[in-house]
Length: 113
Length: 115
Image 1 (cartoon, each protein chain N blue to C red):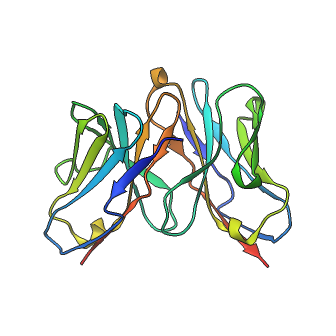
Image 2: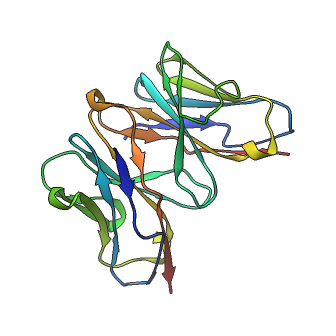
């Protein structure tokens, strides 16, 4: 199957700072990528759909000014958590959509202190 | 509305015993169905998928799943569970891109394996 990478895999940042997470589809071009958030012992919660060359579509309740998504190329989408707070600490997972399925990245553990 | 239900939040089985994890879905178009496994602190690993054709699907690690359209179900099975199968299991449904891009996940079933 296709490979999706995320970087970094783990990041610690101080409250008030911003952190950027990269999601790359390594062997196919993804016009659509997704960003999920997962709290401990819970399922994936879709945050936003990232479309190459256009603005991301955010799910209800997700602050688009806080979670900035950029999908500048067919192989790269980035999620920037701005002015991070401890409640933003979570596991963030991206996926890239092919014709019939999604390929998931390994996830990024964000801890805000 | 599109949704996935995994009725069992937590299941405990003895090593060597058989396993069945339930998944029911609601989807307005031709469903594509998936089972993923997630170990603690890790990403999702695809176990198996169903797009069309034979309704009994074989996956990795000895897992299989059966698509039953009449019951809107896609239950995951394994004849003999290993201790390393302890993890969180997610069922998901999606469809062709012309029916929408989004995939829908169940809430997950946590599997504990007793030695």
